[in-house]
Image 1 (cartoon, rainbow, N blue to C red):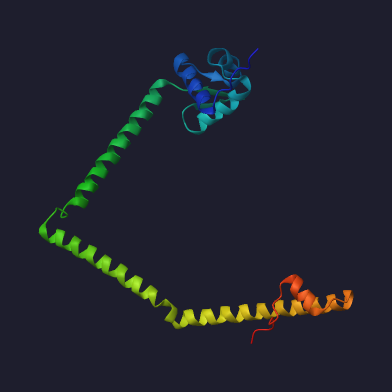
Image 2: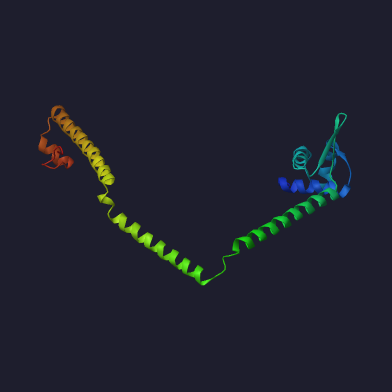
Length: 198
């Protein structure tokens, strides 16, 4: 026996709206928990959640009378909301068209504009060439030279620290195992002229 596919949240919302619009009635939550599974395939356990989301976005109205909550949604309200959205969209569209027309006024293709665009392009190319040339001479920049000096100093200190470590290990190996220094150098690939950097 195959398991029924769970409805998405949006599908449940759509079906719940359909239930309200088709019946054009007012319901309590318990009524919807009985009706929604039969009519629209929405599980009784998810009715409360779907109902709350529809109330939160104003699609379904809710009123507390005494100790009970009553829910309703009529197609006329939804139609008015759609019309209002459509009118707002039309207004936005009209405003955007006016803005576009206003922005393009005075920007018609003229000889002067074409010359200015050409000049702008020429200046941008010139700027790019100058930037490339400045980049060539970057190593002569005093700040860059100072940064290189500092980096060299740090590298030299690190190299001498590692050289110190190697000499300490060689000394330990000679004492501990009685190896000769030239054998240690040969086995570990340490050059004969290995020493500190001045």
